[in-house]
Image (tube, rainbow, N blue to C red; front, side):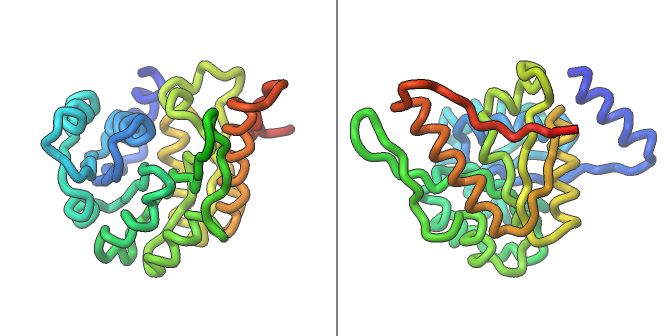
Length: 230
């Protein structure tokens, strides 16, 4: 709560109102975590769901607060300044194609192309390039930024659980768009790190495959994290 209060005070002191309308496409743990965090920063959140009146979606709206609502995905995207893709990687491409014209809009891609097979499941990388590049190809006039795909939803909502603020890697072709996303990340108490163009998405996505497989099948457990060095 303190970090959010300080953020609001900073924006007021600066004399500038930073209030966006953000469409969160997806109502899973990641989507709800991002929705509640963005709403806490003063942004309006519209959840994009195929069932906007379902109990699950209405619960997400209630948990997010008074600045939240829900609509069909394309309708949410049409009303938003910023679109966040927080859906399973296997449907990301199909969902992105149905969102309408996103020209000039900021699109945050928080997805990973994970394909699971077997029991226990073994994860593999499901695309030839990256979902970040695929989304940018579907919407060439949008500003796609890969972010939030390497961090758990628990860390999004409780960054102080780590010894140092978790680093959130960014990849995208538009510097202003990445700076805007960095502002959201900083407001969450996390640490943004710009890695370069959208093609870098492939390497952050592949890292998640390694992490998940180790958690399920590795004899000796380890974590792969982004951490700043002096």
